[in-house]
Length: 279
Ligand code: SAM
Image (cartoon, rainbow, N blue to C red; front, side, top):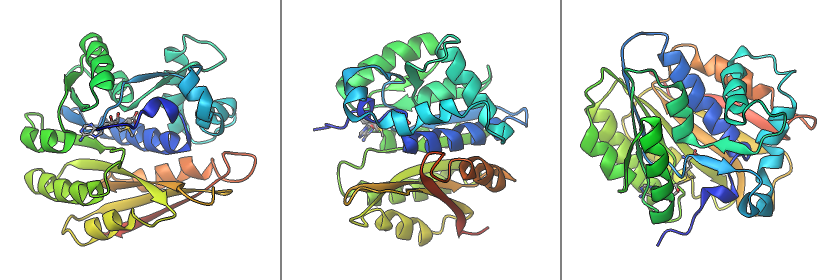
């Protein structure tokens, strides 16, 4: 039984880190002309209403995308620009953000005609929204388990691969399942770029994922983390992203972007970036 709904969390600090890394990876990969197969294994419902009761209940976007949006004229890294422009387009040029794109919408908006985008979503209601949106936006939607679904599609027909793995981790053994899937997927497509999001938890459960990937044999794994400066006593205190086979120079560019979120006047985060597994 799936109970997680991303509408409560859309646009929070973790989404800012996740979608910054996703957009940067895709834009950098597109510096070469060859087509990219993009997979989103846990896609959610694509577009979120930041004014909805669910979003306002947690108000998580206030310290996330709303705050970033208020800084948009002052951001120094040019790599924020594609995100800022897309947010402006989605919100039809309004000064206030009321809509926030989820991962399949970031992929669809930056995808080129030759790129292919497939999104998996298991939750029945989320899947229905996603399917209707996917039909209008050129995204192939499958209502099935995203980890198994990904493996069935590899290697893709396109020469290059970008995959986002972003589970809700409602089930404890999802950390182990992600490690197994990544290892298997990487063996099928060793040049693929894989982004794996994880929550940083006071319980330390996410360490299973970090240790599992570090010992899996997968090479060239970057680890990006942002920690809340004033974390709650329990639960999620930070957001992490592993990036397998990042494009050359991605580490410095992502680091420059996330450094702009640090400090009290920014998003109240501390960002770090290191190689979990070198080449
Ligand atoms: N990737 C989205 C984004 O960045 O906008 C957010 C995804 S949310 C963290 C995780 C989603 O995965 C939820 O919508 C949940 O219903 C879905 N989900 C949970 N288990 C799944 C599975 N085994 N296969 C596919 N989707 C799943």
